[in-house]
Image 1 (spheres, helix red, strand yellow):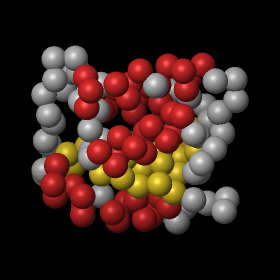
Image 2 (tube, rainbow, N blue to C red; image 1 turned 135 degrees about the vertical axis):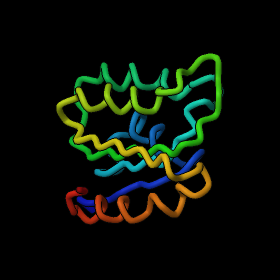
Image 3 (cartoon, helix red, strand yellow; image 1 turned 30 degrees about the vertical axis):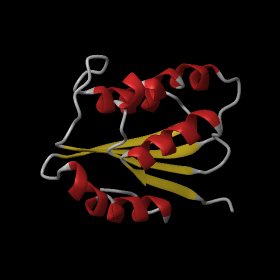
Length: 127
C-alpha cells in the first residue's frame, strides 16, 4: 500500500494528471504517457495551479513521457508537455522524470512506455 502506481496513456494519461492534481494522496507514483493535454483546450492545466497552492502535498514520483505525435491546439504550445514536467520538477515533494520518445508515434508509445513505467513502479532508477 505504500508503493502504488498509476499509469495511463493518452486520455488515461490525462486521468493520471487529474488524479495527481486532485487526489494526490491516492498513489505514490504517477506515470502519464503522452497525456492528451489538448483535451478541452488544455483544461487539465488549470488544475495545476490549485494543486501547487495546496498547503500540504505528499511526496510522489512522476514520469511524463511524450511521443513525436502532438495534437495541435491554439491554446497549447508544442512543448506544453515538456513545460508541464519542468514546472512540476520545481516542486520539492515531486521527483519528476520526463522522457521524449520521438521515434515513437502516439499509438506506439503505449507499448514503449511500459518498461520505464514498470521500472519506476518497482522503485528501479530509470537511466
